[in-house]
Length: 267
Ligand code: SF4
Image 1 (cartoon, protein in one colour):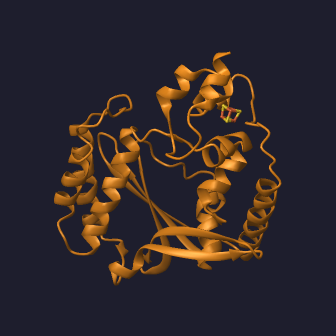
Image 2: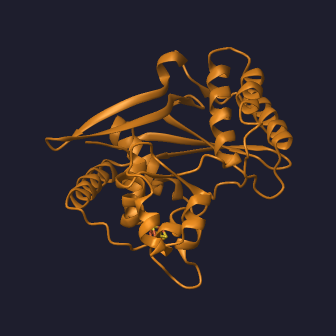
């Protein structure tokens, strides 16, 4: 079986959520504008490093989503997001702090690592290059809010960066955050992941896979009044036995058993 960071992180968020997603085949609908914009923007960044026209790529990729029934966050629209994207690309070029040599090999790189005898772990790293001349692993993020930088060293606790450091063996990691706001901003955040963090992450992966393989899928979302994580979970309709909510937010993988659970719920 092949595992990914997303699978491990979904299980650790809530094992029941993992079961809904990976065993029962339910998936969140791809209608979130911010997520689709992030994908389009990353393709534009790839074009920038390949010395193609990033603005044209952003426009064509984002235009492909225009007709879809997208869910925008408050204050966002298709036009405003395009404008912000173009301004962010300009700002990134002016800053000139990142370099990626041989972008066709060093962007969206696939890494694979065997886990025990039967499993492996796969990750796609956004890039490997330099930030202000320091060789490091690069991860792009688009966000409508700045990422927190306090307390000092916080970035080193980012589990996705630890995961990428573990699978690549690269200690220096950077997160480049493209902040979509009225005055756009690019944050260049860099940290070092230690050997110990990489070892611990490897143990966490093995432990999580063992729990998945022994079919431990009890719900434990860390419910804590008044912040109930279930309220923002896309699978809440399944856990509540409410087909209306579930069908509004989820689609089922082709081939997964047809809507048998809805029939059960309707009794
Ligand atoms: S709704 Fe709550 S219990 Fe159900 S999968 Fe989501 S987080 Fe887990």
